[in-house]
Length: 298
Image (cartoon, rainbow, N blue to C red; front, top):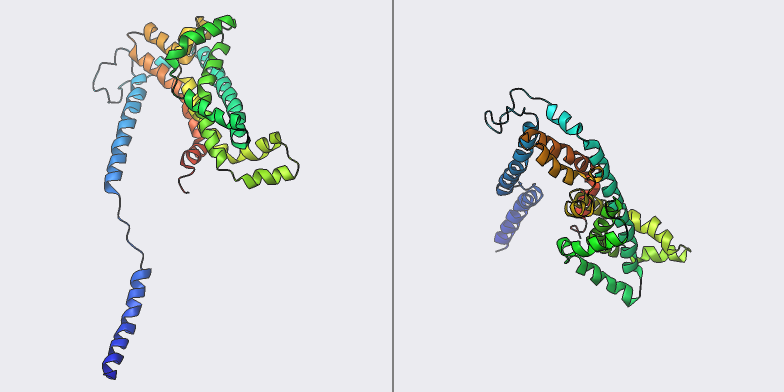
């Protein structure tokens, strides 16, 4: 009997290194084939229209209907871009930059102070204003265009760039406050308390602690708000009328009427109008990804 137990024990000890080797052996990763196929399909859906826009902008007006739409033009030319640039494109671009920078700057200034007050204040009324910002998300822009037009006229701001900055910032504030408030709530309260004990005021804590910690969120909302203001069409259409104050979306609509037959010139104007936003994304892509993925690791 003792010999049988001894043999069984020896077999267990002999098999134990094999079990340890199996546990320590790295597992073979199985690739996500459906996910990879879906990603490639989505990449094709996104790339093909962009490719078509670029090659179409390089075609001549007579060669627009020649050959396949996705084929590289036989005689590529930059004349379409010259045509667009010679038709006050730089003025429209500068107007869009002024409106976008002004709207985003005003939105961030108001939203940061509002989000900080909602998070730090102990008053029920101040905390309750967060629900008002949530309500602002449910109000469509088209439903308020008549009251906004009336207010702009009464303020003697009609047909000015400021008439585009103020409403654009007003409609960008709610979503910006909601996002920044959620990020500020994740900042440990002990950090604010330690700075308060050292004698720091609310403004010092806002600029020295809150803003650096929520910088990814600020970049995220800045890019999002800039994209919304840059592509805005209804406010420029209703609140301005001078050709010198046109922004790019309204100018593209004018190009469509001016170059009705010259489709490559219209596409060239669209390509030029997307370059500033593309450059903004390239500059802030790291902060943008950090802001979009923040909180998923908790």
